[in-house]
Amino acid sequence: MSLDLAIFVVSSVIAVFGAAMMIFQRNPVASVLYLILSLVAQAVLYVQLGAAFVGAVLIIVYSGAILVLFLFVIMMLNLRSSEDLGENSPPIHRFVKYFISILFFLELAFVIRVSVGAGSTTTAGIETSTDGLFGSVESVATLLFTRYLYPFELTSILLLSAIVGAVIIARRATADELPMKPDTPAEPISQNLNEGHE
Amino acid sequence: MVPISAYLIVGVALFAIGTVGVLVSRNMIVLLMSVELMLNAANLCLITFSRSQNIMDGHAFVFLVLTIAAAEAAVGLAMVITLYRNRETINIDRFNLLKW
Image: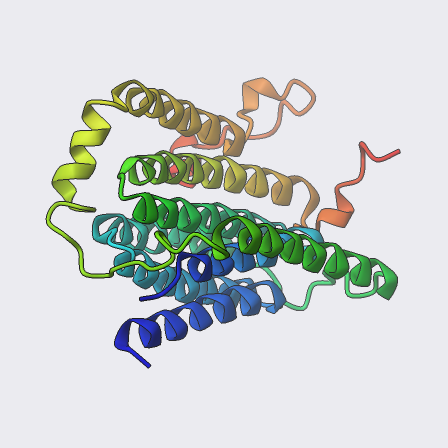
């Protein structure tokens, strides 16, 4: 077994294991930690595919920012992990859901096997030694600022609208917006602004 | 030499696990995390195709998908906070006012 294959097998098993454990945890904090484990293993796969910079961004942005935002929200809501989360739903419902998902997986795997796996010997193997500039910061930046400049600039508008939307949605209504309860003291908005911090 | 179909199978498996999470989970935060997992599975397939075709456009696509994932997480968690403030739960079975 070559080293490439060993790294691939170990990291893909960890990625799938972390993802599977994520959805079966009752405690949401444990779910977040298992998702971080899965993402780190996926970053290893990215690096193996020659996308070192994207793998680093995955760890920094996802594990470092987005999942920490999830942890902030879980801590802030002070969730009870013993809350009833639908385990009393009829088992036929759960069976149907698993069955649909497994069918979906088998269908996609079949498509991959038909279209990619068989016959295409030219692309059947990936040389994991990165050649020169492939996947480097320089080449990714060149793409983002030349060919994909317009979509790249549009993402700034998307992020701006997401920030404004998160602040507006998570904001508590102030006193002058609640005509039914004139006794409610005005909440300081600066306290709520932290919720849309990401 | 790992065949590219192996990477694609891993990506599809992660996507299917995300589908299970969206369908089965009653916790709204875990549901949002499952959506993030599905976006990441698509990213893995994009990187794989980018490597196999030896063109780097997939990396740019992954960046755009990461941006969308960040925006989705921010807005989704803001909605979770508002729902929890109003209903004192994040069990999605309780949010059934629009259900016929």
